[in-house]
Every structure is written in C-alpha cells, then in structure tokens.
Length: 202
Image (cartoon, rainbow, N blue to C red; front, side, top):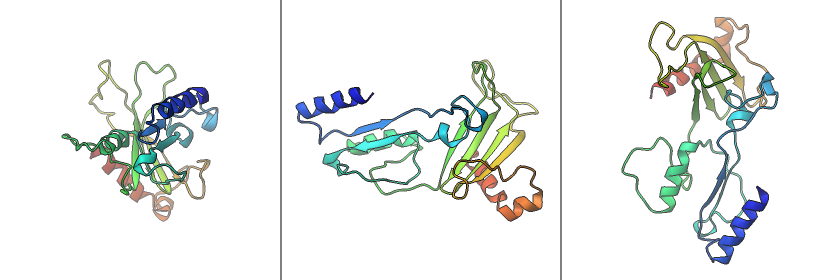
C-alpha cells in the first residue's frame, strides 16, 4: 500500500498536478482482532467504526499537516468532492463538505443481520457523540429481499450499551450493565437513548 501511494504521488508530481489534486485516503471499515471478544468488522465498537481518513489538496489550502477532530462519516465524501469541484448538488445529501467549518454533534451507524452473515450478530444502531456512545440491539433481521420485515419483533430492543468515551475510550465498561432505571437516570442515559431513536427516524 505504501508503494502504491508513493507511485500515485510521484505520477501526480510528474504531471504537475500534485498541488491541484484533492487526494482522499480512507477505508470502508476497521476490524476487531479479539477486541470485545469479536474477530469481525460489523460490530458497534471503535476499532470497527473508526477508520483512517486523510485529505490532501495543497492548492485548496490542505497542504500542511494538521489534525481535525470533527466527527465525519463516508456520507461526507461526495459533498466534499463536489465542493472542491465547485459543483452544487441537485439532490439532497446526508453528509456535508469537509472543506468548510461545519461540524456535527453525532454520527448514526446501523447494522442489519442478514442471511449472508455466517457469524450472526443481532441488528444494531448506535449513536456516537463526541463524548458518549449509546447502542441498541434489535430482534430483527433482513428478509430474503434485503428488506426489514414487519411483525411483532420489529424494533424490539434486546440489549443496550452506553459508554463514556472520555473516561472509557476503549469501551471496556458498559454503564448500563445491571443498572436500574434510577441509575440510568443519574447517568443521564435517557437523553442519548432518545437521541438515538430520533436519529433512526430522521
């Protein structure tokens, strides 16, 4: 991979286009290597959800090394490329251009148990904020056509997790494990759970 990126950079330089090319380097997912007891990708933990994301465009002001701690998602890629090209999209986008200063307060990620999954895991949705993450697992799976079925179990919550990402960045302590309703209230959990529900339906 390093050799391929070097060759790509050298080719752009030889064409005189290195400074005027927006290069975006990322991955589709991370992978757990026994983190949380899993050897897979489609689980709602940081090693699976957080991926490398680099932008380089000297001609557009992205020529010096710096860290940007905004929450981003793959839905931001298309708006960023269109913005760089000076194109206004004619359809709505869920993401926004990373060339501006706009920031978001959360990212929603979801996974639906499907029939191709050889190691089943329950469907889940997770609300990832800057300092917290709230996850719900559901008793449903995609049907043969890849659609969400209706029925009694649609959306039934089987299990929940809540992590304080400041105090527990490796997500080692699920603060909802064994918690009473009163303990949940003191933790402030009902609010991120409400935001997760709202994010799923908008």
